[in-house]
Length: 287
Image (cartoon, rainbow, N blue to C red; front, side, top):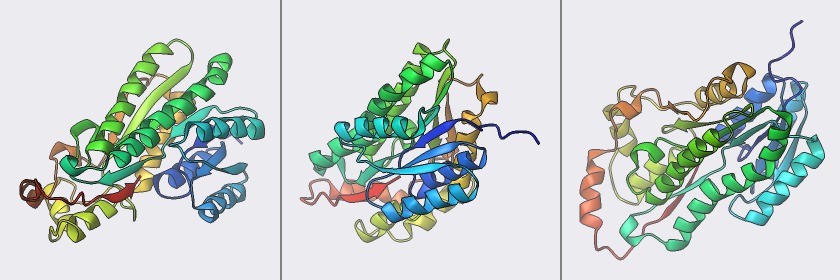
């Protein structure tokens, strides 16, 4: 029987206790990879992912980390290498976003977005890439967002961090292009998870935009959200040996929504009306 395409490889997927990260971790495990699952607060959910991977016949561990704290990111790299011996596939998926009008944005939340979504990924990659270069094989896959390509209403900090992740992807890909290590990015649109949909809840409950979710779906070509499995499939392909010819690319996974940016029209009016408001109206949103 043929071996699985990622058999013998070790993958580290940040933010993999739920949502997109969970789907990616399970998909990579189904292809034979051992997986390091990370979480910040949801230990039980991370352990459930580990259990599912073990039931597939592969190996997995869970590690707690706050990707916004450099010392914890460095510790994560050390723990992964100590437990697994190597990391061949790094998926920088963990992210946080705060919906808030920029002119009233809380600076601490803007800094948090940059640290978690961008700086943490850079530090973790720096810690793990030497082993990949030494072995002459590696896959670094950064989960960015369509918000990093076209921007997002009330998501200036998040969009900036995700755009930075795209720049990081392209610069590092060029630097290691002749080493056997590839660096690519996957840019999901709005994904059908509880957390992904929280943005529309915020638009409706905080800004008072009626039926924001339905308005978005009406205004984009596919009239639907992307699923976590659709994103995971693309990440898994980039991790495979057959994807060695793809480097420095940003692959959008949004079912075509980016072809007609579909923010609720009412949002533009709200932006205009709320300028000068004393409330930041910030609301956390994670990917």
